[in-house]
Length: 171
Picture: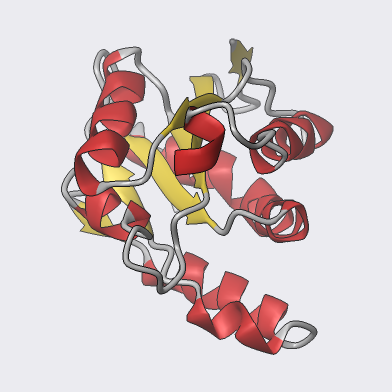
């Protein structure tokens, strides 16, 4: 689903849940729908989350598919921790041409104020090429519903500015 940006560009948003168990139907995906809802609440509607298993290739493939669909915002949830299968940042890094470390740093800092283990999230953010437009913002969020709501709150005031910048807008 696309929404018209205040600045005139279209924004196609895609949410990708990264979870072995959810992809196999063994556990309900809660963070993906929570991300979709949080985005809608800030005026960024998107379709249902896409669910993929953990892994570099599956994450990169899902992001590349969303970019191929022309997405301007891709938010992943899950796979950002320290376990052996938490490879969302590694998969994401393969498609980014520019990193935006301040976004992830801000998310970790705010969350750590109430949840000390938030500093263990390895999520990254950056810009990737997207089909038919001037690029997309890709952001990794942790897999908890609280973390995605906090993350979207941080992203909300940034998304339109970033997309406008990608489209050649002035600072």
